[in-house]
Length: 171
Length: 321
Image (cartoon, rainbow over all chains, first blue to last red; front, side):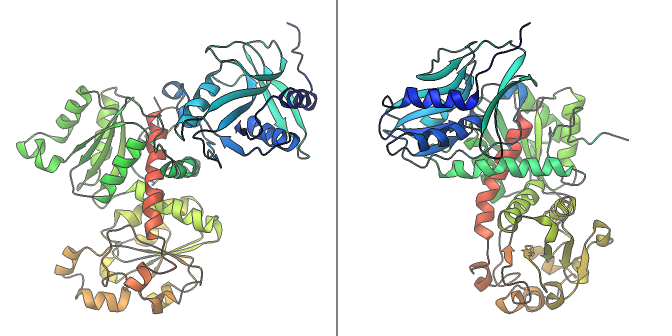
């Protein structure tokens, strides 16, 4: 099969920021899903004008595959340094695939309060949705074989890059 | 060699029975997992859905308020249904055996047992019985068995030490008091040595030390001045009043004079020492109020961390087949 064509992560991030500029609410909070989404949330908040609080969410305790795979190590602390009740929130993730992580993140947000509105921004949409979830802002759409996973990495100098890897277990 | 009964054939933790022989990476994973659970207690909705639809039975064959309550809170914050059975006043008093009680509760679709028992080894017996019956999806947590082990207390002590002191590899930890009867001390000593603590001391009168305690890798002291010198962590043990009636100790007052933790004795330790106690405390017997309520005391944070550590244990083993 043909090798997967992935966009350059930095160029895709610039595209995503362009699409969000002028479209997102001025005081919308940016909440990155660990770990790739967290890096993106920081970069997007720094690039866009306005007062955007940045939060981080780890969906480990809200995943729907706990009964099948158990709790994997490396859970991080969810940090939302703003009042979720009444907030406009942009959830940010690196790769949108089945939609299950986003579903878990939305559930977790509601345990902090009732947001006014939740939007979704992703760097890469690879299709394959298993839930009725669609991104509000997306930089690139790519086709990736089911047995591969798309991974965002951050270099020591902060530069982001995308790569495909063989899938390790269920996602 | 028989397999560690706490681990399944894939080496995953499926029961928590003792810290003895538990690999360091399993202990570290529990402590790491507990960290994000600490903040759940500060949320609007103090719950996550991990154990939704699961039923946890608290089986306390021996009385306990704090441990049972913190296990109950932990299970409820994981969204489990919790049934508290005060077994000492129910079936067993009518003659039912321990394993018959377990079989009946499994028939009610129990998913997890939290067991406290005055007999050392009772949680092992239950875990082995469940495994022999093929109930691999039913898990056991030891909440204290006899003089043997109290692994979640040991883990919360380790969590507290790591929270305040970060690295175990430079620490001197002194455990003071009734080590002979203390499952808390035994679990903590195993945990500390597994995580590479270079100096673990035990300070106690000779009558309250088990024989061969040195074999656990600790240094023995019989006086507080030398035992506490330059320590980073002091763990006080509860002196159970029933022990004082026997020949082991002269009197509570005499014990306090020699082994009670007062500000004067604590001054032998490092200035940034932390003072821990598993509770319930006997003020004026093993610890002075000035220390228990003082700036170096982390006794109440221990209780808060205990809930997060128990959530971590239950969520890790609850997801293992």
